[in-house]
Length: 236
Length: 121
Ligand SMILES: Nc1nc2c(ncn2[C@@H]2O[C@H](COP(=O)(O)OP(=O)(O)OP(=O)(O)O)[C@@H](O)[C@H]2O)c(=O)[nH]1
Ligand SMILES: [Mg+2]
Ligand SMILES: [Zn+2]
Image 1 (cartoon, each protein chain N blue to C red):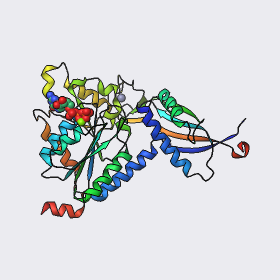
Image 2 (cartoon, chains in turn blue, red; image 1 turned 90 degrees about the vertical axis):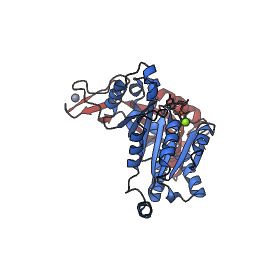
Image 3 (tube, each protein chain N blue to C red; image 1 turned 135 degrees about the horizontal axis):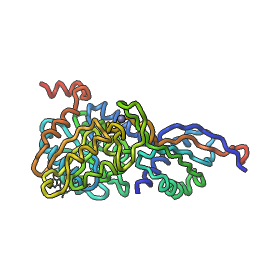
């Protein structure tokens, strides 16, 4: 019989990923960038919200996008039309972005641009309601999206993402008249799991609620995170 | 599919640890503590671990997973309760939302059992 001895570990299973996320966040902080990680099931409207966000905010904020797409550049091409740098990350068969992939994106951004010019990096995660919430990529805030067509019970069935979210966008509100969906019930279900999350109902189609979302985004780009010389440049 | 990725992340963490060990020990068992309020399904994780460790330094190593239940603490009631995952997370007594989680979010490598090199060689 083999003798064994125990080595106490007590470290997170995702330690390697979290170390990478801390590295990414340190880069963002050094450059005065706020990073938001957008997560949802496939098709909840991440790219649609990003399009509206770039159209509205890219004049007043310097924005770059890191786009996680399984195999195609379709979403990245949609966003490039707004004239901001879009780093497409081919995630292959992986069902979420991890910190190593985003690190590759950051270093590409760094190679092609002066990264300290940016205020905001928006990360579009792979469409998936389960895993992305467990894999930090170095973001400062997590944004979850849930479209009205997905049903009231999703926050109860897939609670982790809703628990971890700092902001929840209830998307496609223009479809409400066609659906038997109870917006108040969705909110109540989310609140059970996450009492402090900011919930904003939006429609990328009609524009409803987007101003509140833009305000929230602006509020995350806090002056204390921006590099001092940038505050001076912007406020002159 | 996501257990494959979770396993990959676990293997990266274990690889980092192993590379830092001067004696490159033979790993017999990896003990994990996995909470029920995580996105990890232990059975799938077992399966993916066996598949992905073939021909690596972890070949033949076993994975032992201890699950921890979801336990929340209600501040108004000053008591712990067990939310019903998928159904109800608020406090069953006063309906306050689930604020503090005391157990169930663990994704931890608790300890690693290594073969005694004196016996193996
Ligand atoms: N009616 C309506 N349709 C929307 C809205 N937002 C997005 N859509 C539609 O929903 C579909 C998916 O939108 P996307 O923005 O591509 O969703 P996504 O989350 O980026 O999808 P993946 O990246 O593939 O996960 C498209 O057909 C959009 O036109 C909305 O506010 N209202
Ligand atoms: Mg998209
Ligand atoms: Zn209570």
